[in-house]
Image (cartoon, rainbow, N blue to C red; front, side):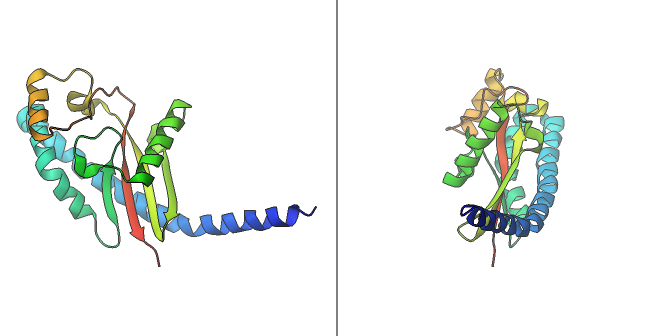
Length: 181
């Protein structure tokens, strides 16, 4: 009985902390589809106009600009992964831990499509949503990249590690953050 009161207080405290996150989660999750759609439309347009080679160039030149456009105050929006193509997208320690958690959850059978994680970290709201490897990703990120395309990727991204993915694997995650008063 003496443990019941502290446990009840802890449960109430945790639910009180989780409740205020819901509006932030909803707001953050609403920012992901337009960001994702613009990135995908850019890649699709580049592939249609010049093949995967054009897509690599478009990603290298336009993805940072698209990220900046979608990072309107108070939100910062981006992408990260454990296997990076661009070092500019390197995960911080919190993002790395969440990506590793996503990998573990996927290994346990949880579908990546709806996988996300949100929490308060040092006065900041942080949100990540998993990105599964799609069919369109495989030309540049799959296990059998054409040699001329691999050479171009190496030219633009000399430290590239984002290869060898299979359909449905964790490619990375959208990552969002904002200060909370």
